[in-house]
Image (cartoon, protein in one colour):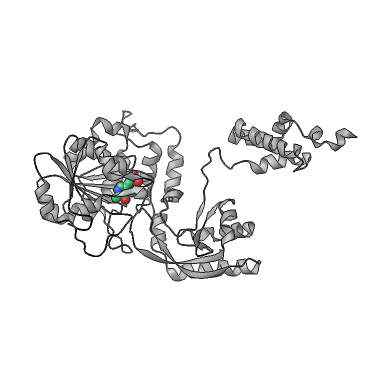
Amino acid sequence: MRAMADPRQRVPGTDRVLAEPAVAAAVQRLGRRLVKEAVHAAQERARAGEISPADVTAEALAALPKSASSIRRVLNATGVLLHTNLGRAPLSAAAVQAVQEAAGTTNVELDLHTGRRGPRGAAAISALLDSVPRAEAAHVVNNGAAVLALAATALAQDREIVLARGEMVEIGAGFRIPDLLTATGARLREIGTTNRVRLDDYRAALGPDTGFVLKVHPSNFVISGFTADVPVAALRDLDVPVVVDIGSGLLHPHPVLPREPDATTALRDGADLVIASGDKLLGGPQAGLLLGRADLVQQLRQHPLARALRVDKLTLAALEATLRGPSTLTDNALRQDPAQLLRRAELLAEALTAAGVPACSQLSDATVGGGGAPGVTLPSAAVALPERFAKPLREGKPPVIARLDQGWCLLDLAAVPAECDDELRRAVLAAS
Ligand SMILES: *Cc1c(COP(=O)(O)O)cnc(C)c1O
């Protein structure tokens, strides 16, 4: 009788569980190690008496991750369109499809017509040049910081980069653009004060040691009050290259964000090079874009460091599809009708209330995020829940990331595609 009382005696062995058809299929999909871990965890629970030994297989299957990577799709209900912690821009369906196609063996460096080696990334670069006809040439590297490092190395090593003090930006997570620039061996020539810089400051700083003048868009903060800065157009007559880091990756002026800099305008105003990220307002994959004068782009492209910063085939595929494909999710989110967002929030709140969840709809302010347009709020709408919902929502399937605000757990809909509303409703029910 003792054996009956001790559940350990009846816990099925690992090999037996692994041989179950559903578990064997999971091994095919996820690999043996992950599945074995889940089986062991379920066996432990059975031995501890937390679950019945008969449920070990079901428990192990339920605990299995969806994919062999631990990066999970989450619903972004923060109201921050480009949330750095959530991977910034979500890729469009067209870009996802392109990534999937590129994931196997590809023609990334083979010209299928001639059978010879082809230039890597040519299609993405031609898509970029078609999108920004003002640029004579373009190049793509790993991210915006990589373009800055490449420009500083190729154009200003042992020389000076002239930069206004009000544009000495910390990008995030402790990374500072001035430190990045000097790490390459370039020297910084700081000009002006935190709040003001004049054309004469630039003129006075130029000399035989000047590599280039850098303008950096303060993309994550605003200085207001007694301020002055020098627009790109005023720098065009200086005798040195003017490099403009616009940050966000807008290629043209955007109607919703009239004050956000864009590549076409910067080039028209006289920038010799424009630097931008691919995964901010451009709405594409992480990438660093370089656009501008052909001789300078060539100089950077041919620098030995360029090889260390080159982008992967997945990025090239996603970038080309982002540029050539339908409008991006980021752009769609920017152009939403606030009345429609409110309607969605009302419907969600009604459905939740009917199911016994204390929820109500309200107006909300969304933001673009660290990726651009600091200080700009986008009219949005949210479902308000008690704060205690935040943690179970974050740990749900799929995880939902809410915004905490004065004791409330807000589900801002600005960055939630409308087709995910039902999934969001089910996630809240599961968390209640
Ligand atoms: C975001 C940003 C960067 C860094 O770009 P990453 O793609 O994140 O490396 C550089 N400069 C500005 C102005 C930015 O906003």
